[in-house]
Amino acid sequence: MKRRDGAPDKPRPTAYDKALGLLARREQSKRELRRKLDQGGYAGEESDAALARLGDQRYQDDERFAAMLLRNRASQGYGPARIRMELKTHGLADAAIRQLLDECEVDWNASAMNQLRRRYGGKPAADREEQGKRAQFLLRRGFSAATVRYATHADVDEADEET
Image 1 (cartoon, rainbow, N blue to C red):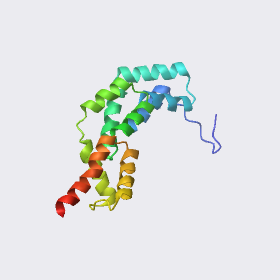
Image 2 (cartoon, rainbow, N blue to C red):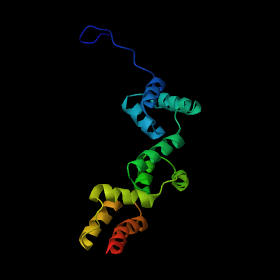
Image 3 (cartoon, rainbow, N blue to C red):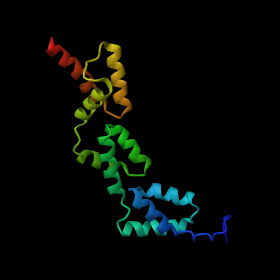
């Protein structure tokens, strides 16, 4: 069969080749690859076989994907709750997510403080309303209530020390 411009059609890649090409660009979860193969019109059996082969060859590994996503999102200033929810959307088990977050070496308090500095500068909150806005900002980024309390009260404590 020929395209409109007269050139012959390229043969369609196999599900394995398609998934391998996607993995060559970046790490992807099994669920994400399955969705992309389904959208590409590949049969379920062909997709299953391709994903199983990629897993056996360790080209696709959900644990490696999760660790990469955790490092990436933590470096972008997101908190553990937000990261946990994103990992769940990729089909990872709760126990694996919990273990990954427990083993990661991220100082969530320092990360939250850094986000406040980036967003609001070094000056402390002017009033309670401003402190509440800062707290909401951190909560939306996925930090725990204890971390938010620590970060939003730290600037008040620092201001008290300066006077």
